[in-house]
Image (tube, rainbow, N blue to C red):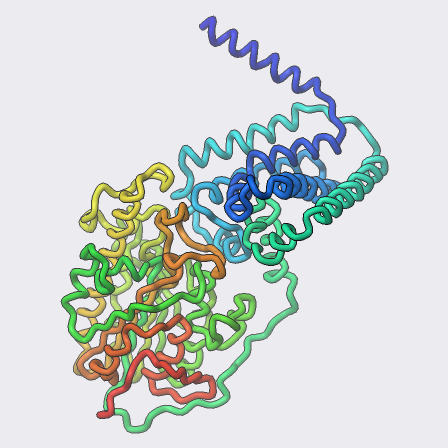
Length: 547
């Protein structure tokens, strides 16, 4: 009891001394800038030191840190002309603490795509991320420093006095930055021109910059109208059977963790027993996140020309196929279709009201419920897209029922608290469940084999880092993303009446492909001739001559 009393008295003395501190706004901004750089930007410093070792670049590294401190100084000072200082500094500290946690533990970069991912993250997914380490990081690097700001008295000046001092400080900081860059022109040229990825780790400046870009593109771009692209299309005549095509869009699956592709663990025990199944081994994703890859794979634009901000306003391959009279259904057990299915029949299976298998997480297998009703409802071509929850991290252990926990021990805590083998075990269990889901879908489709030309396509949206090179999860810019985040599985299964020439197509399984091939493959399967058909030199499938 006495010890507690002494502690409280000491604590109150510290707080009272802090309260007696009186700083000018410029000094407070400078000290907070120092704190942010030295305590919330270690990922930036460490990444920079990997490229510019301190022993050989001591002056440049020191000058770069000074430049970054002054950049924070300039940014906060200018924003302070419009925003009250304490709330502004608190915002920087809190956002910096959060982004520093993800950059430090998972190698996350908060570019435009990652900001979109954050905006689209559900509450359940957010709760998967919050743990004791996250909470402590937020407390000591964000909340407590923010609270201390309100214990410090500030020198009272008029707005015009503060504005004048801010402009002088900004001018002085700019001159110092210019001088430092001039003295190390070669190193700064290399830093700016050849190592652009390094500045993406400056937090929270880069996340703020990315957020502004996203908000501008979403709310302040010129009004856009939906564009019909396919001016003409032709369908085959006198087809004996209608097409039934099922596309399963996987989530976060890696090609090198599929035993179909040579992985040492048996993660595809059910699919390995299927005949007329082909696993393509050299396929790369359009992006490293669902928000990019999903609209990109159904777009008529290739990866190099794809623009996310325009995608929802442009006709995609599903829109084109729908024009032919094909009945299309999109079922989603993930976040959404990312606007791909805006003009199609869309069913959300993330809810217990529709998905019969929730324990409490709604399982992918539930998307097969009453699918036969859609198929039998009317004659003609059918296209079904099922968007999986798949292997979505970081809580891999929640992505599969207990019965699929074959690889143990599986990580059931924050990734930073688990050994890498535990993370891999949990992840491989998700692949095992995906194997079950795909195989179950194939067995379901076999019931219709006598009435349709059936094809199933499974393709993942992107891969996942599981600790290789100290990286976790996904979302790095494609220019620097490791292969683990871009090398994806793609599987095709053909029914007995399918147009696919299985022996000839199987010979193509090791050719390099990407998401760019998906749109053309769907048009090829439905035998749709359109002015949007790119006709790739290396098609994914070979059609049978008998048709």
